[in-house]
Image (cartoon, rainbow, N blue to C red):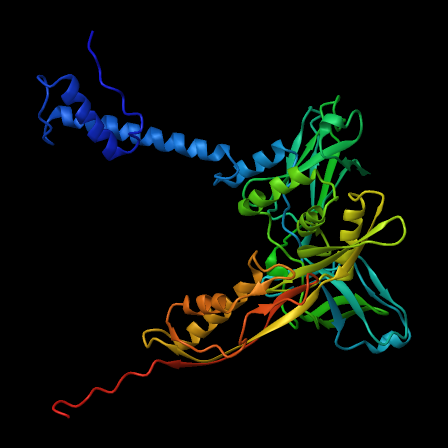
Length: 485
């Protein structure tokens, strides 16, 4: 019996497999084949085996990578892992904003002004609409109301009467918690799982694919009722959402249709920036949030629980919490008071969470806190950090204006990164690293801030203020004339 040498199982790429096959042949058949010239048939067979081995090993590596959340690359894989532990990833969240009528119709002196639900206006790539009807009485001297980014959609389907029916929306980017399902005009109830639904009019909703489409799933007659054959299924939802809706103040500037003793065009604009818009939860977010979900079990008990649950919270009309900080107040009476300071993202900065977003967060935490805790949601404090870079010298091979814009982007990124937390600090070294990391920057001298910046306390978040700088090209040294002393 031939005594074969150990098999090199660590050979997994093309070159290594080729080399190990050659070594194997020389050890096992030294008298039969020792010529590895490229024109030999045996060499071709060796290379083909190595080629197939490389492809198989690559496929095995890819499959193995998708087994674990920490290494998964495909969004669909992360969604399956999330559902396996009962975690519901957050979809796109719509920004919200208050708009004000820039001029009022004369008829308002005698007639009420009505802005209908669904009135829309565009602001760049974003579309905003009213989510309810607003009525202003005759004689009103100011008109202001809320709008949310996104557009309303209605889709109709027909039930086949089969068990476990699913229906997918045609629109992508379905806004988080914006849907309602009716079967023959009767509203059915969304549940987390049909396994405990029993014989009730229930359904589950889940995102699928890479574009936040929505899938509605009905029961099988034992776990959730089955819509009858021919029943009309109506899915109402909103599509849009994302950071595209966090438009700056003044970005909304146009007219919407309203009624004031007849149809009128009402000019409106936003005096403040829209806030709360957030993109769907991506893979990196799920790597962070799924372990938090498992640890907290969807309950708020510790400070870390309140912080984690608050930061992951979103509301379909009020927006999403971007940062949160929990402070425990120990009261003299039986209950403890937990103050949660909350901020929302607005464009490339943070703002104090709106009253609507704070109210929604309060209800969310109230449902998850223990009975002895009183939850209070506070608007987070802001601490502006201004920059004065003096003269920034730029390599002459770059456009200085473009470099200046890139510097602004780099400085703003210091405040939107995960490391910028309430009560945090900004170090001078980080500022130099960010600016000098911009292509084309040769040198500059930072005059403001003159030292590391620390937030006043854990209720305060550092946000970017003004950026002052002068852009210039690096001076070219004047050559010394030939022969000069």
